[in-house]
Image (cartoon, rainbow, N blue to C red; front, side):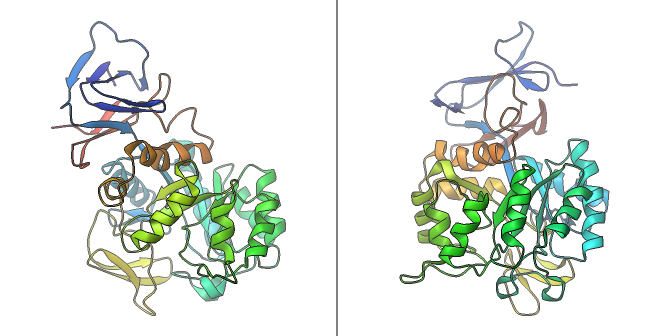
Length: 380
């Protein structure tokens, strides 16, 4: 059972700012407002950081295990792998497959969400554009018919958190409206939409850009396309994969500067190889080769997800991109928690919330991970 603890001496990042020489009180599984007299005091170095646990809304697996096709044990292994890297809240993302198979996966993943192991399900495909399919099987793609979207929503038993849609396809706008009516995130991605078509989808209720830049037309000066619409609209939160492969640093900086810390969500888009290593893997029905930590389809060479973990995304955002620590915390914890409707429980270090936190050293390397008051990685 979790016991009372006081993490003392480090720089603590709160919603109101960073406290030097601060402390975080852990009372059982939650963050406490006052310290019990018998609490264990854990002294941290003054140049270390305590930040909220990371929240990943777009993740296909890790540790050699797949959320898209693995067993329950595989999914739990993948969840644990990402916890070891600071992600205390994770949404399981699917890839394009047969509708009956996706419905079956939704049933299995929803049980893990009901148990609290997952924060829900993200359906990435099959309702995406064949022009921007990326690492999805073209033969299994289909238009976003609201009846099909509803079938997967029902199969997920209330645990469907997000659908990625090419909203310009037949049924796309009606599907966005359906999702919005049921409190499910409609995300625009794997799309060949124009600027005007993208704005129509936003007006219908879409609120997220799936891995901005990737799997969509580039930014043009006469045809601005979806990127301009998604960046400029205050209703949209943009996902960014900050692994140094998916985005040039200048593109990352442009998006973060324009959307701001309030409208950015750092994601991994991780696949099985995250936290595991190079080799050959399956992503749905497609074979992937991971070489030098970059995942690409064996046939065609398209980037196939990532091997990113959120601790690496955090470190890169601060040390390479030069972002303020507080801004990175918003993008990697608070914003995704809000999107999931979970900010009352996770996403910041505040009394009453789950005791989910990450300890980083002065170079922003991960030193400790706590989830619900229990150490997943004990600081050394």
